[in-house]
Image 1 (cartoon, helix red, strand yellow):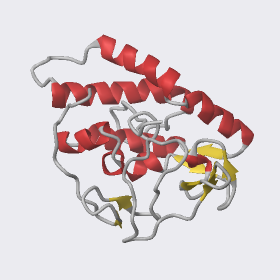
Image 2 (tube, helix red, strand yellow):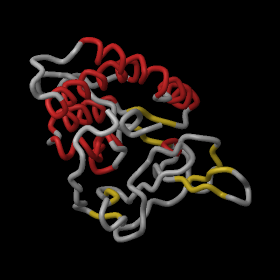
Image 3 (cartoon, rainbow, N blue to C red):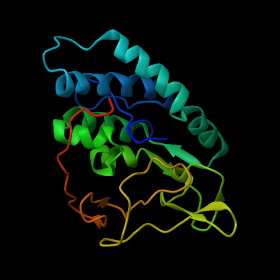
Length: 204
């Protein structure tokens, strides 16, 4: 699932310190926050967020963002969903600059942010084989084992280690050690990664 779909889940609370975002609320809240940013960054002359944007994106996320899989993993005990972290994720998304929002739209860890990545907390130890969904791993990191034709939970990548900022692939994801993100320019895990300016709304 794409970070704009999976790790990118966020909220439309107007106050500070709400009660958290539940997994059942995830798609609708993410859609609202994302559409608000799309209007601001991609269609600044539009006076309001089109209602069809929120409705369409909510439906897409419910059907395509693996939310049902997340529910199954939570029920199976392989995943915790942190509602308070989800609320922080929303606040992060709504505070993005348009350059940062472009990174968010284009599946980059830096745009998605630590708050959104940390919303899903896996419980499977290193070495555990998984069929899909690297976020079930306690490190958030998985690599594909060509010999076994399956993915296995892997250690996080240390600061300075090579990584791919795109976590779209459900079989593997380069998650850095806590407090680090994969830098777009150096393709290494960094404490303060750089956001590369690019087309604001390509692919929207």
